Amino acid sequence: MKKIILSFIVIFNLIFCSVFAKNDLYEKIDLFGEVIENIKKDYVDDVNQSEMMDSAINGVLQSLDPYSAYMSPELFKEMQTDTRGEFGGLGIEIGMEAGVVKVISPIDDTPAEKAGIKAGDYIVKIGKEQVQGKSLMEAVKLMRGPIGTSINLTIRRKNVKKPLEFKITRKIIEVRSVSSEIISKDKNIGYVRLKSFNENSDSQFLKSIKKFEKNIKIKGYIIDLRNNPGGLLTQAINITDFFLNDGEIVSTKGRKVSETRKFFARKGDEVKGKPVIVLINNGSASASEIFAGALKDHKRAIILGENSYGKGSVQSIIPLKNGGGMRLTISKYYLPSGKSISEVGVTPDILVEETGDEFKINSDNDNQLNYAINLFNS
Image (tube, rainbow, N blue to C red; front, side):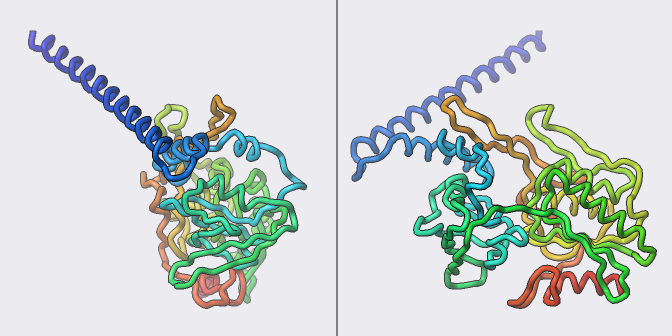
């Protein structure tokens, strides 16, 4: 009898909570309608109600995280259209932070990188348009345009009092994801710069490693992931697998069973246990953090540089009935240790911040790379 009564109480509580939650939601919807009516009736200027609703929908999504966003039918169609040969870009990966567009990283050898845009910069104006209040997709749209045309970006940078202005000319962005060379006086360090994780990165990467492995002098590797905004999860797994004999690489967890998975290394270390140093900075995000975090957790590499960006989530593009679309976070990445990358990033084993106004990746003024080289030679 006690069990029956207890079951009844549990069921009653579930029904009561469900009804209460629904009533609470309906009250909020009614409140929202009341706010809209008051704006329509009393606001000082005429308001485009369709645009206002788009902003409200986008506000709901952006309240979830910096990567979820709404796209109107016009914007969604434009984002899906193949515009190669017609439109150019600047070469920056961006995200949202507290309603402001933040540079995740400039891509190597692109107009933005050559102009001096840095990871962590905040874009406050695009041309004459204030960015505050705009969605991520709207900001992307403003930055795109015909090849050869220029646009001014106004930037706020940490520890710089005045806003900075950059004039950047758009061009087609083509990223060769892997470059490599042998560095150091003794020609004994293999240096691989990985700029992104695109569909061919693993084959390019393996080709570079195999070429280095033929050189009997090679005693170790420096893998440079600075300003690498990420890319394909499969590529991050494949490239991480080159350096591991076994063990977990990464796991993803979401509400759906299909989004909860674990990925493991296959037997075979392509560099036969040689020491590895991985360079990261604030512009190393997503797939870069999976690679660096997995090698750190397995104690397979020394991570050197600055804390990474902290983008540890997967987004899906979902078409909507009105012809628009939404970008929604559906799962998060977790390192072998069980730690989430989201908003935390990967902490380097050795903190080395970039120094000097003349700092440039893989140059004589690259104090982080020089530090890594000295570690091998010490």
